[in-house]
Image (tube, rainbow, N blue to C red; front, side, top):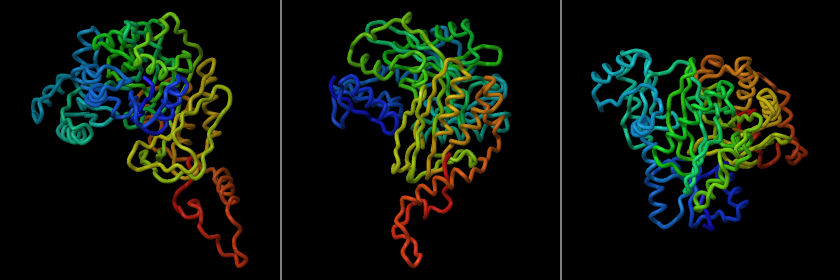
Length: 450
């Protein structure tokens, strides 16, 4: 394995390229190995098989494992056989609303309609009563068909105020399968994570032992190799249930790298090349606490609507214990066609409070001029008293930020606008504006993303 094709874009492409360069591999557009990042190709068994059929090295899990874990119904069946608890749920016959109503009643409302081939929060609808079921089934089916080409949906009991906790696993082709601890990812909008941390403030040593045992059992059930993440929901009574397995590197992998010292992407490359992982479970000794915030070009005050366009100025934070995984620079254009993730800012501290404080300071040191971002929203989340107490759950944003609005801070906006203006040619003697105005001078309703 000498040249790696990175079949992705943005910050994860930069991240994978860096790992390739550090291990002496070349990242190019024609290659003998393919790393899919964490996009849809990373979860496509057909793509993985095509790569292998072409004689290339697939840097990911076996296609069969991707296929099983990518089908939520097949995944549930596989892990249940391995003794892993699942959220109570049931498959439903397509178009049979009457039978679905009986099954939903048996589970007990509220229930969740979920796409069998789903991911990223698509094809999901919460249902509070039987009267809402038919519309939810129809909408979820349409969305699943459009997003995944597979309109199958199923029902699951909707847990109230659960935590989203996941376990990172690594397995090589020589029989080593180990975990790198858990991450908590409960701060979500539209079923997608925006803040993650490790370790979880809710997980005790005893619960951690049970979680990682279940995660490894789930991975073994499908013959898992390479990096993957087994996700669970944790209820208020401390019971956990299998949610899904993500058969790829996760967006939030940097925080696990912070506390374990393990380079997960380099491990992926090593495993794919056929080498042993090179360390054992006993060698993984977590240290401190790490937390990550995802910086998006979107407007939290407008239902997190994406914001596209050019980035006029970008200031990223730095300093001890700060890491930035970024896919953009000043002059980059945020497109309409893709996920609006600009990058991730993560921080490490000796304990949870110091990690949060360090990340908060890093976010305050960050500035984006051009598209609207969620930067101010992230700062408010980190500063919320319930978050600081560790009282997080998947409904946290809906409960505590139902109608968030950014606080006015004209001083910062004016300072950045002045910096842009200072780089402009001086106006003509007659006072007319300079030719070729900057985007800042012509974008009208755009505002400072912070």
